[in-house]
Image 1 (cartoon, rainbow, N blue to C red):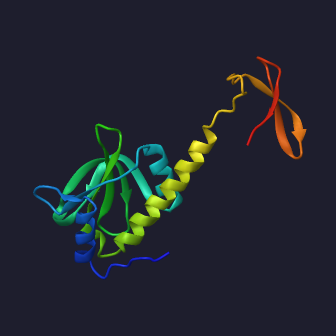
Image 2: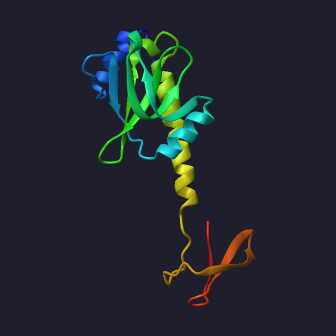
Image 3: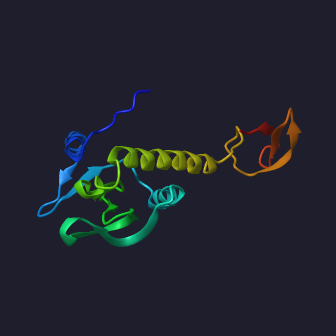
Length: 164
């Protein structure tokens, strides 16, 4: 897999514009549409990466500018990344990219956040899978093991079945 590296903040800004970033009026803040839909998973992902997080806080930008966001990652230095919820339930990332570039590689930073979010989202989805019998009932009890797999007995129809 090829990894793209950006040489400076101008390159990053151009790349982000192509990806859908929009500059906020009156400031250096840029907005990126993301596929993030769960604030709790985002918060846990940021914490997993060792990033301090607050909810309903200000994102710090250049010249003392601030923008309120639902989730804020407090980065080393004077600049942060925020995520604000849209009407459709997705979150936009908001940041002063020029300021972040002073201390961080934006591409690596956003990639690591997105990757950790994707992993944590997959793990959460996996935990939420409900086991069901072929009759459609979710009422069952564990009945033992067969070839090192758990077996379950449906309390509705009495059938035994395996689960992942």
